[in-house]
Each structure stands twice: as structure tokens, then as C-alpha cells.
Length: 224
Image (cartoon, rainbow, N blue to C red; front, side, top):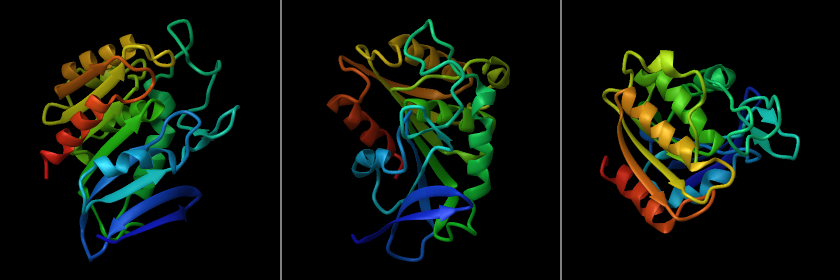
């Protein structure tokens, strides 16, 4: 099926989008890249997501010191282990609020935002978790790939805002950028928030294994 793949600017947000032919409205996948990525980084995952959906991949709103973009301003350098300072949930609120401003039918007339699914990699996974926990009414379900849960989220999950959500989480046990303990903690917190979590852990680094790729594909395919 032919698709319309283009890069656009909406109020200073640089966005790569792919929309199917036809009038829609179409279910939406929001693709959130990791540290030093950009609007093109998440396209490697698009072929594993259901067809006939509208895919939106925004560029992060903060420049990073080593090139590319991120979703929160780094305070003490790049987190690479337990000894570093990891971001808290409030660090991601500017990105969440900015996304809410642009994800409208005015900007994306073919989009069905009642069918919004998030896929985030690394730092983008942390943003996907934050977005969904703060605005669960906006999200059908979501995937966190090689990511982590922001700090200080406990108060937000106390009332189980994700009780009707399902999540796919994957991580590599040899990840030297985001420790495996961060993924296991994210699963624990998502379940405390009420989410039904499918977890795929494999013997790889900061990436998805072939098994977890298939798991993500199956997770979303089962919904369509």
C-alpha cells in the first residue's frame, strides 16, 4: 500500500509522519526516540507495526551536548549507570505538554487520537511511561524498549491509573547504558499502576533482540 511519508514542522516541532492512503481516520502510533536521536531514529520499528496506521515521530525538544536531541535537559551528564542522576517525572512534563498541544485533529486531520499508541526507545520509553501515567485517558496501550521509569513517579501511580492498559516492555541483560535493573523496576511500577505487562528480556545490549522484536510485533498485531 502506498503511503505518504514526509517531514513537517508544527509550531517548531520537527515531525516525520507516515499516513496511509485514504481519508481515515486512522489509529495513531507515536514513535519516541532515545537520547541523541531525532525524527528518523524510530523508523526502524515501523515495519513491525500494524499497517494502515498513521505514524508520528517527533524530534526531541532539547539539544544534547554530543549531537542529536533528547526529551529532558541533562543536569549532570548522560545517565550510564546507577551512580548517575536519573531524571524525575517532572523533567518530562514540558515534552508531554508540548506533545499534547500538537497531537490534534487540526494538525493531523487523518488521525484518530482515540486510538493512540506509544512506542518509546530508551529515553523515549521514559517519556512514553510519563505521558501514559499522567494522561491515561489519551493512550490505548504502549511499549517501552530498552528504557527506564523516571524517578518520583510513585505518587502518580498510587490510584492505579493504568488499570485498563496493556504494555510491552523489553530490555537486554547486557545493556550498559540503561541497566537491566531499570527495566525490571519499570515493570514493577507499571504493574503497581494497574497495567498488564508483557515483558521480554534477552541476552543483548542496548537494543532489541530478534525474539523481542517479534514479541512487540505480536503485541500490537493482536489488537488489530
